Image 1 (spheres, one colour):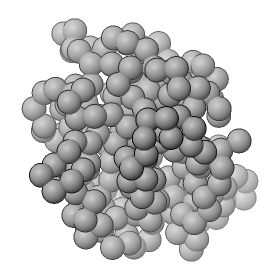
Image 2 (cartoon, rainbow, N blue to C red; image 1 turned 90 degrees about the vertical axis):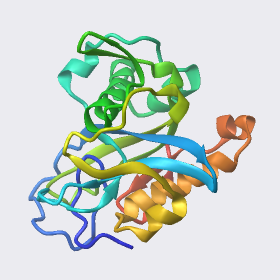
Image 3 (cartoon, helix red, strand yellow; image 1 turned 45 degrees about the horizontal axis):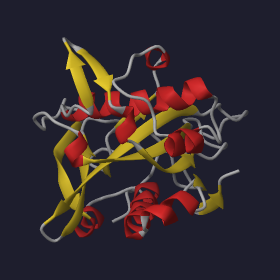
Length: 228
C-alpha cells in the first residue's frame, strides 16, 4: 500500500510529485544512510523494519528501514573494522572517502539507536561498528523541488552480524523482521518499495553478479538511473 502524501524524511528520501511548499531555490540534500538487516526465515528472506511513530509529523505509521542522517561525529568515530573494498568503492562513486566511511558509521549507529541491535561491539556506551559486514545496495535522492531533501544510501547486513535484544527507542513501532509479502501489505512509501525490489534482485544474484551489477540511483519515486 502506498503511503499517502509522501513527504521526504531521512528514511524515505522520495516524495510525491504534489508535495507542498516548493522552495525558491533547491535545498542541498542531507546525507543519510539506512541498513537493510536481513535473515532467512522459514518462508524466505525477511528484513528488519518498523513503523514510524504515530506522533511523527511526516509519514506516521509508515513502514521503513532503520536509518537517519549522518552526524558530524560520524566522521570522527572509531570502528571495529573498515568497509569492504567493493562497498567503499560504491560509496565513493558519489562521496569523498571520509563521507563514505561516515555513511557506514551512521548506518550502524542508527540501527543501534532505533532497534537496540549492535552491528559491531560496545565499549561502555560507545558503539564500535563492524563496517566489514556492510554491502552496498543503492542510493536515493529527493527531487530538488521539495523543501526537505536527502541523499540516502541503502546498505545491507546479515542479521547474524548483529547481536543484542531487539527493542525500539520509541521512534519506530512494531519493530520486527518482515517477509517481502508482509512488508508490501503495510502502508509503505513508494521509494521503500522500490528499494525492497532492488534488494530482492540483489538476493537472487550470485556473488560475482553482485560485483558486476550496474549501480542504481533513484531520483524521486519514479526515476531509476544508473549511478555515474
